[in-house]
Image (cartoon, rainbow, N blue to C red; front, side):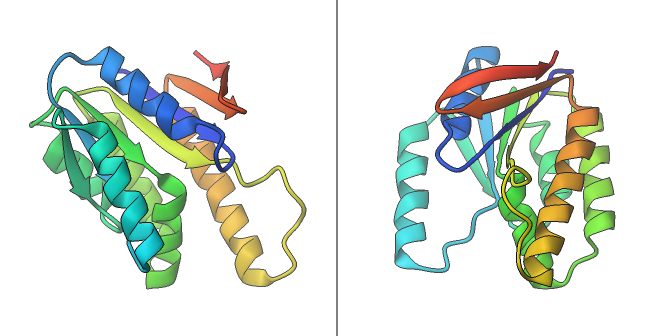
Length: 170
């Protein structure tokens, strides 16, 4: 099955690219698995705008923590799935004190078993300076390990910079 990891920095165009790619690969109903949580009004507005931009073809599933279960439950209902974004999901797990290794393994199993195309979106956080505190360094390390595991699993890996896609794999 088609699996794609779309990486990039903030405002690199990765979400727009991933959405267009998902719409192009499947003719029917699409699922958007959202990991963001609206902790303030700005984020609530952002989420509402994104939902409107996707339109009625998209089924939106909110899965801030149990992403693997959301993939398993949704895959029988749609023709393709877009997960946006793994980096926010990782933040949610860290804030919840979850077992990140177990969650990452469950996600890998869910992606590998998914019977429909899956596109995963994640931030590339390893291109900057070494963070100055332990929590930020742990986040950067966990994000790097998550991205490496998903990149190894996916058939394609695309890096977006300034809206331009660069194929890294596939």
